[in-house]
Image (cartoon, rainbow, N blue to C red; front, side):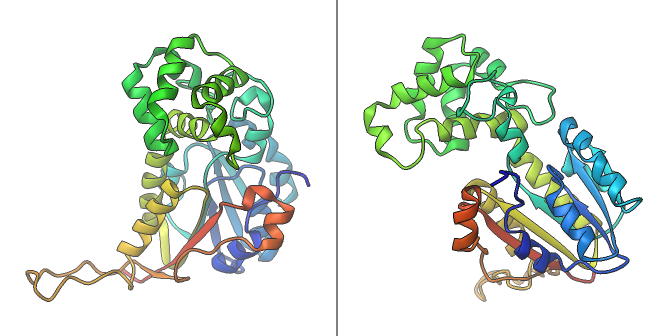
Length: 301
């Protein structure tokens, strides 16, 4: 396994339904897996966006390969409306990319020791900056909210006591020791939720997602498609609420409530609920196991 397989690729292509002459936005270009598949599926064009300069540099080979059909921009996908005025489809693959996760120097993983960085854009506040300067209450709330970690207060206290914390292996040990031997019995590593929380905080991932969904709605043409693959409940909740509250399936006001005109639906949901990967994909690519896909068709204004 290469480790860079695009998750739920067949389902993404089915939901996006690429067609000749159309223009698509891949808001999380990463290794270019989705962009390549879209361009191979139809004679169309793709704008690939990524805030990681390494991803943009790697993607230049694909720019050459697709000769004028692929354009890459370094930036946040929440600013997609600044890079293009309209699109026939937007796809977002949320969270950390395989390339980022597999490079110890980027500091996203505790599998190998590396600097405690976690910055997708390679700029701004790093995870080390945050854990070494913030107060215990803020650190605890961050780990609890973004990591959904029950032992957040105990972990935050242990991190504060061990400062300075500069490496991923050091942080993983601090978190594991703080939770005690019982944590080792669980299916996931005891530091997983804390690492997730710090990564989300450092990159403002939930705020980026909320802004990105609004930008996608702005640029999508009627009959354009929005396809989002998320990897944890915090992301999925935002996507689900965004689509369902703006869809033809949105709950109607109670007949006992004041008669207020409901906003016109912006989307038709392409699936009831979230799609999940097949057992075969999870077996061949374990990183797909928590993925959920939601998609909507933009309605006429």
